[in-house]
Image (cartoon, rainbow, N blue to C red):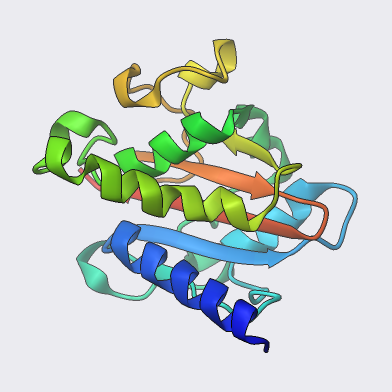
Length: 188
């Protein structure tokens, strides 16, 4: 690994640590098929590793480990589930990742949000940055269905559920070579 790769991996790791904690999921896998949804399923089921060997953050509620495959948080996801994933702009995707800190994925529920917003937003920018300028981003936040450029800090809290949790929200990043899944779950 070159120094540049090592530095990029360190920045990635710091951003994941700052953004993803208990009850959250952040993982990347290789893009191997024409249908990106199949590669996203592999990432969600933890049946593939990060092609760059970079870190991932995966923690169930209570800090325990997520199960693999059908026992994991995305066990019920099938290809058709992705019909509830809407294209979203890079800025809006970054905002969604920040809102995953809130109990109901809203900025109102993020302690000291006005103070923490610049730092959280900077860390969130690292995620789509990894996938390049041509990456396509998706979310299950219903606001994106009608406006992929919406201000996701001030959106309705309605989501197309991907899991059996009470509520879940996230972003899927798709490039020509990689697929990333960045998600949070609410158990209440």
